[in-house]
Length: 562
Image 1 (spheres, rainbow, N blue to C red):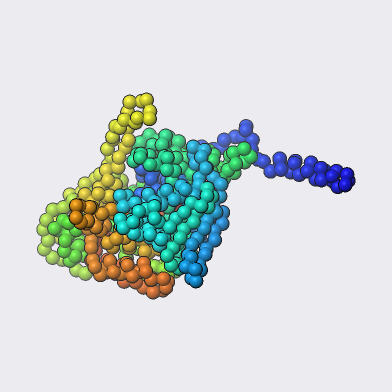
Image 2 (spheres, rainbow, N blue to C red):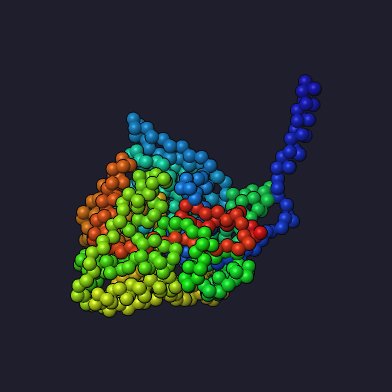
């Protein structure tokens, strides 16, 4: 007995050094490198629920927020905050669910990221008062569609926080579970911290209230000048044991917005910055062979406001579309392809990464004669950047050739001073994006917009044009309600039925066929006018180990200066 006890003590003594050796924490460890970069155009609101409205916002939220999954550059689903999951499909008992076990990670304020944070974020997205196309990603969840359309409470949706690290999703019937998991990789479905978000509409506009859970946090932003992302030391890390560089190598990413596009090119040539994610328009042809180019799964398009009498007739909309020289615009932008439909290159056909929806759907853009006599005056709203300005000039020329008078309206930003009761300083300035405000409210005649895919499925790009699937809130009166339809005001019974049928169809091939019919009808009616499929093109200098996800967004967790 004594010998056995002595042997056990020796084993314990031998294990202790090994356990100590597993710790890589060093309080004097070098914090790491500060990397000067230029991402893309400025972003003024970092709320993931609205990030799909611009590629720039998606790029930044991808760095600051972590979700359950992500899609790698080969189109394969990878776990992010999910440790493991279990699918239950028991027809006899009527149980259809997915249960996720979460990895341990923390918010930038040091609190635990829990299943309740995903539940809060998704209930917020499905609230009828929140305008977000991303709600459609969750419609297969029990009661999610009804909740978004005001037919039940968001508290009735089939999502449950079993405990801190266990999240369960329940469905009413068998679904394509793999496809749904791909939905959950969308940057719009990340967790949000309720205490930071609730009752604070400006929570995502400034560093002091932006609580995030991804590899980087927003340390500082000075609009018009710079933005600084800093390593989130809580990201997937045991702060008492792990090196601060365990999952995020660079200390800071400093984005200089004070430089013009031409100055950014000059700076990267001199080695002053390491990365340019938005190459100056007049330099693109010169750097075409040097740039790293990726599909962005985004379609630069025009929304027509169908409440404007000029655009009420589909024939007029098609004439405006036919007048556009998409090839010339793509050549002007260099890193773009002429659009052949709304759904861009890279979106899966029948949920298969090796076959694209676009290649099967073919060219749906009519090349009909755009001649005819038209008249009327309307405005074309654009964002304040050189790509939108260049495209707007070409659209204006084409449309005025038809007889219209087109006024290009460049929408920038406006500052708002607000009193913050929780702080003693008298006022704080917020910067509001007037372009995105117009995009959400529908206050435009025509507006140029980047329509980014929410996931790899064509449904999420096509569903928002159908009544009940747009993610837009309804207007209630005393005795009735009016469906907001979608941003254009388009409402086709035939199109609504196709989207409804596609949503209900569980056979993969049949569902894809219905979605192709839906896109074809949408392009015949043309409430939205695709122009080019955009690409992401970047220049690097003196930097290595930048990863890219399937949507072309750069990931800097492992980035190092050479």
